[in-house]
Image (cartoon, rainbow, N blue to C red):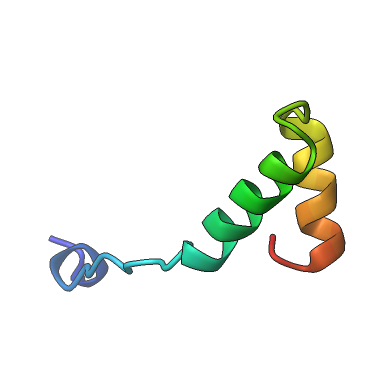
Length: 48
């Protein structure tokens, strides 16, 4: 068995800040933005 597989540990990621930003942007734009504009806005904020 490879050593890396034996010692594999899942990393828990915290996306709380990103989720809050998505919800605030979604509400601000009256539920009209799709994933492409939302992704662009999140990238501009440096969250993804």
